[in-house]
Amino acid sequence: MTRQTINEALEWIATGIEVTGVGIIVVGAIAASLVFVYGGLVTVGWPGAFRHYRANLGRGILLGLELLVAADIIGTVAVTPSLENLSILGLIVLIRTFLSFSLEVEIEGRWPWRRGETEAAQDGRSPTGERF
Image (tube, rainbow, N blue to C red; front, side, top):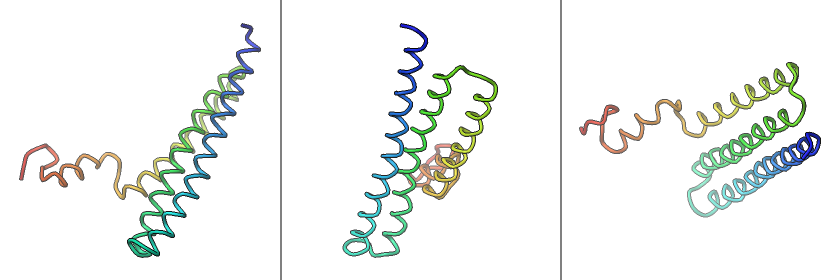
C-alpha cells in the first residue's frame, strides 16, 4: 500500500464519520422533537416535555459532536501534518470540547465533577460513601 492510498482511505473514512455525525444530530433533533410533541400532548405536559426535549436534543448534539471531532482528527492525520493543520485541529477540538462540556452541564444540571455527589445523595450516602 502506498501513502497516497492510505491517505485516500483515511479521507473517505473521515468523510463517512462526518456524515454519520451530522446524521446523528439531524435524527436526534427529529426524534427529540417527536418525543417532545408526544410528551406535551399525551404524557408529562408541556413544561416537563420541554425539559426532556432540551436534554434529548443536547444528547443528540453531543454524540454528533464527538463523531465530528473524531473525523477532524482522522482528517488531519490523512493530510501531511503541518503546524498550520495541527493548530487548526487544536482550535476545532477546543471549540467542540467547550460545546460538549457546555451541553453536558446543560443536560445534567450540574458540573461533571459533581456527579458522584449527586449519585451518592440519591443512594442515601455521603460523598465519601458513608450511609446517613
